[in-house]
Amino acid sequence: MAWIKTIPYDEAVGKLKMLYDRVKGPDNNVDNIMMMHSLRPHSMEGHMAIYKYVLHHTGNTVPKWFLETLGVWVSRLNDCDYCVEHHFSGLKRLLQDDAKADALRAAIEARNIDAAPLDEAQRLAMDYARQLTRDPGGMTHDIVLQMRAAGYTDGEVLEINQVTAYFNYANRTVLGLGCSTKGDILGLSPNKSDNPDDWSHT
Image (cartoon, rainbow, N blue to C red):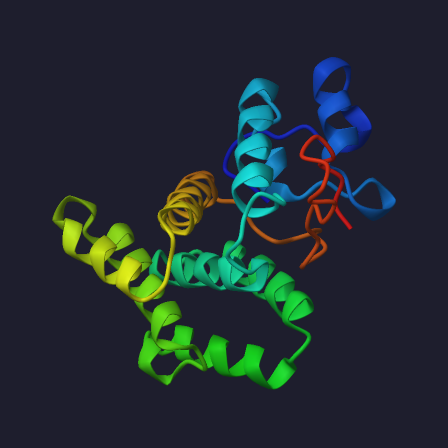
């Protein structure tokens, strides 16, 4: 499951057990990406807080399915199969349109966003995420101006930026520690967006 030691749910005590109880899904299942932090529970707490606030918060105005699409895109650009599989499952559940979800997945796998069933503004956001993932030092003000002209508010540009940055962090956590999906339940997410302190997965 990982290249470092992890502590399973039934062996957790103290703060780790408390955090596992906050993030667990059905049958006490804890996603492997969270178990990667089990030797340093404070870093799990930080990871989960930023994940919930960036991707699953009522303060966001970009549709959650599209934020998940950005996450799948960034994860594929980084060849992070773990996050692609988890977040595509979540995207598909949120979108409730299997044909569109499958078309998005096909375009992402082909790295051809022009083929994705997205509008012009969404394609621009995907290009922003690609640039920030592949060439962060090459980012210029122009792309933000283009996003603004396409209809995004500056707050929405910030949302897109933060989701892109979060997935680059999550991908590197997974890839750098050999995290696999073995034993995970794909597609669970902390859906109680109205309560940022509720981290439970359903």
